[in-house]
Image (tube, rainbow, N blue to C red; front, side, top):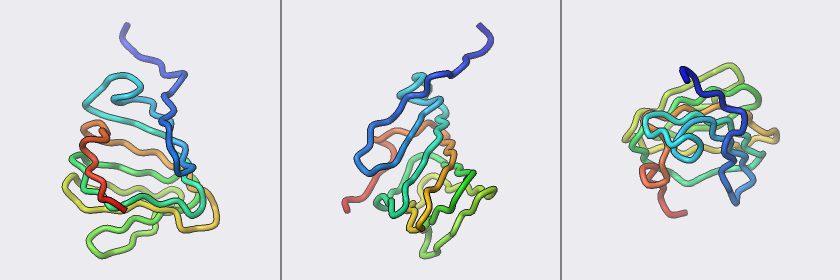
Amino acid sequence: MPYQLQVNPFVVPTTDGKLIEEHAGHASTGDRHISIAHMIAPPGWSEPFQTPEFDEYTLVSRGKKMIEVDGEQIILQAGQSVCIRKGTRVRYSNPFDEECNYWSVCLPAFSIDAVNREPQ
């Protein structure tokens, strides 16, 4: 078949209230070259600093997301995108009072072993 239609993305189990629906990648399709996920981060959500072994593109479709990188705080708003290059120490959060709806593309695909999260 010359295409792969995704009608049932893999919902990644989380404990922090964040919704992650992987449309392509390790968990959903077995693809190790790219991952594409839709995410909804609730108000007050954050994760620890990490130094991923993949490039991560983020496109915000609704709300805002804060990205801390190299001592700088970037506020990514709806309609904006950013690429964080592999090997960069970064922290993602939503300290705002509204949920953040966004898409993430990782090259190569996201892997828990390749994200290198720091202990909290």
